[in-house]
Amino acid sequence: MSASLQDPSLTVPTPAPPKRERRGSVGVARNLGLVIALVILCIVGVVTAGDRFASSDNVLTILRLAAVIGVVSIGMTFVITGGGIDLSVGAIVALASVWATTTGTQAMAGDVHWIVMVFSAILVGTACGAINGLLVAYGRIVPFIATLAMLASARGLAEIISDRKNQIIREQGFFDFFGAEPLGIPMIVIIFALVTVAGWFLLNRTTFGRRTFAVGGNPEAARLAGIKVQRHTVYLYALLGTTCGIAAVMLMSRTTIGSSTHGSLYELDAIAAVVIGGTLLSGGRGTVVGTLFGVLIFTTLTNVFTLNNLSTSVQAVAKGVIIVIAVLLQQRIANRKP
Image 1 (cartoon, helix red, strand yellow):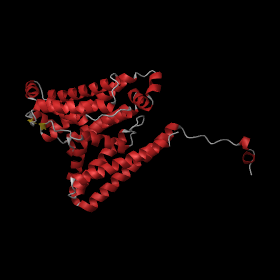
Image 2: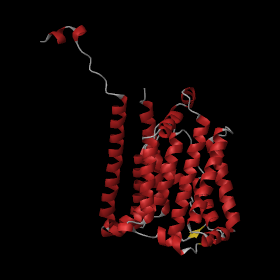
Image 3: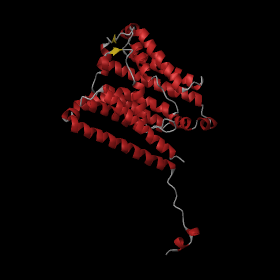
Image 4: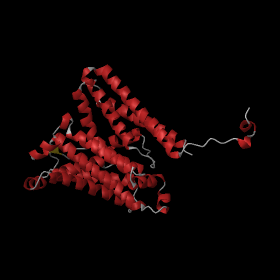
């Protein structure tokens, strides 16, 4: 037996792996679990629906459906990681789509360029998000209440502006751009991919992302570290509003109308996708990649249910069960934190 084993004082302790490495291993394991869940769903889809599920047209359908709610979910990832939540995203999408398709906006777009409609939608979304942020950060209103008020106000304003009628888009240039399919890939899917990459970079490779984790993990510690927590909170909600504006434009291109009914229940789908992806509802931990898989899992699940002629009620029950399981797993993981 060697001397080092005989004398404990000579034994060299095994160094603990760095925290970053351990967090990376946990993240890889979590994403691997999401990939396995998505693969299992695809297998179920192939077994139950056959070629109808496995066809390239159906795959593009899934991606188109995932694109709009996916963009909203990326923005929601930032807010939840920063310790907040937003129940008004669906109403903001509706208001942005209605505002961008009013007679006045479309007349201006006809005189200048259809891009005016895009800027209008994004500007309205960002403004609504900034108002939410100001109410939460400086008004000290609980996020649940502040965004619930925005939900009611934005949906109501959208109904007043549109008179509860669908506003048909007449700008052909708008459809020519957003209806294009470079290399066979729908434009809204490309936009979703670009937003996902930009969101991942912003959250994981910038000071803004590090501050978001700090604010969500411990706001008081973040304040003592010199971070302007209130201002950063406003930025997070404004960012989510911006993604809602982008989603409104994508929805307008897909439906050819602006409507006060757009974005119905988007808040539930976005929060569910973020939670399924592994972002903690209590804040301090978030993952854009996980949100991407969460969106794909939910969209694929809906597609499988639809192809098998299952009712929307059954879909809602299944989604609810999945959300509960995800939250329970989160709580179990959180209780393991030192």
